[in-house]
Length: 120
Image 1 (cartoon, helix red, strand yellow):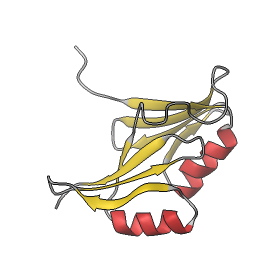
Image 2 (tube, helix red, strand yellow):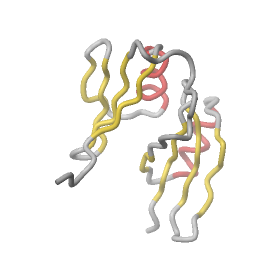
Image 3 (cartoon, one colour):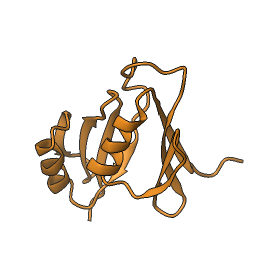
Image 4 (tube, helix red, strand yellow):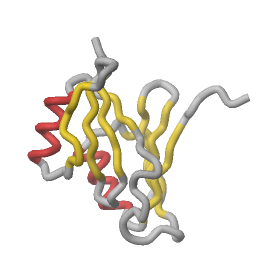
């Protein structure tokens, strides 16, 4: 029986560019760097990975097919910081009917991600 998600991997043909985005700009906590595969530790049991894949070329052909959600404590502050750094936002922070906040943005490969702030 499957009982959890323990990781997600985004493949690219430009790992250096994605590494700078996820490590330097988003400031995800680095778990390991094996040259062609880089892993970030999110929470106790979750890894967010990026890696080189020879079947991937250019920007994402279907960027909405999978949308990772990254938890934040201050969505407005993160939105400001990332927007000032040139991150392309498709949706600024908006409060959802269930009380949480969501903002949607793109990484350098065109993958669509969301920041999510749970209600307090």
